[in-house]
Image (cartoon, rainbow, N blue to C red):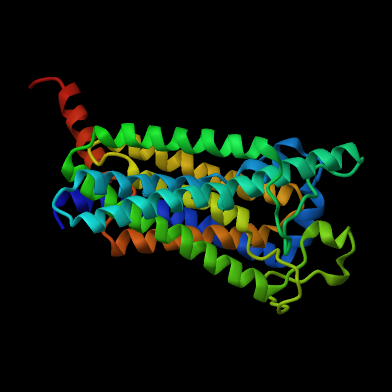
Length: 326
């Protein structure tokens, strides 16, 4: 490790220790006060939390769609690959991107929006929509039009962005695409498996009656209830991987994207507790699981989220430039 890396090690460690400390404190607090926190801040008629619930799951699908476009662009540009490999990469990435948009996001979002509108018209709380164990049906031609518009927008935007990348940058992005997609898939599988096994009642399902309330550390087995951990929070937290897609020679932009995406995951966690869809322990565990997985993959694949070394070097250079000459 060179001197610059040694100087930056404390920065990374401080961020990790502060965030880990906060999350562990929240988890400890949730063990004793989950019910009280939920009853204090919960409001199923919060329009902001409802908006996040209905349309806020765009993060993982967007990451996967961008990754698919990277694979597609790499195949189109890489003449050294066998023609059949290139065709497989292009066709596979185009289909997977479409499937992720259609089944991974649009079907859910449109169904939830329509359900919320129907609930409002029926005098029910706007945030009570829930897809646990249900089969979502994508309604109307409007959804098909939205699918086409969104798919073209992401495809055109991604291909324009990638057309300005060098071969070296594109090769790096291909690695990022594989790792980021793996994070999205693995975190989703882990959380969904735990949801089924834990069988925890959602706050609104209890309707103010703690008779069936259990702490987050108490699994109930598969019973159709899926509060722990939070799937919305897990999906939102994966947007932190977007930092990997930022050019490595732009550390300030990396840092900006890092904190913005970090904040989005935390904000989604709050809205899930606010709308009585989850307890504090549910969302905290999702953040721990997803962010830990990202850190592990970053270390294994040698893909730091932020080039702290470059930021420190820039700061030192700026400081030297502003010092008066002796």
